[in-house]
Image (cartoon, rainbow, N blue to C red):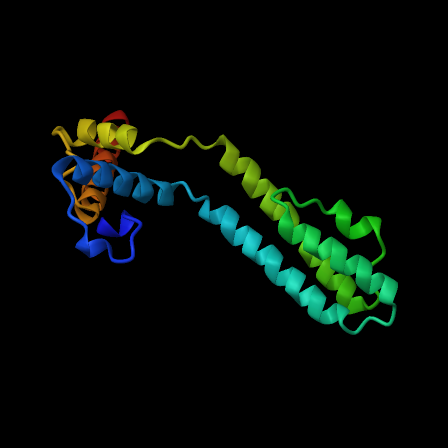
Length: 177
């Protein structure tokens, strides 16, 4: 956690108990943020970027400088925005060859998939580390101190709680079958 300290050599800085608690809290909050990264959304955005690069490579073969300029503007816009729109691809005629049109169509499909995933992710509830720890403590039946529990221990406790939930659901299904 010393690497959370902004300094040339963080190992030389002495940390008092209060600072250690603050650093622990920051560390756990950072770990919790990795759960909220919207990884499916990032993967969809990467797929869009790959197809944009494919189109740029294919657009290098264009004969029309005007189309090349328009394609450049549109593709940069697609990469820069968090809300890509497929109408950008079709409002301006930027494709000359059959291969370019194929790439644009595939790019449009990937943009639609990205937007669909984004709508799905909006509906998901993201909870804080304290709320997750409280729920985990309730399931397991004992208090979990996030200041003393390592990340690996915390993940193991999450796995144990998930297994307990699965066993409980199986028993409930058998009882109600």
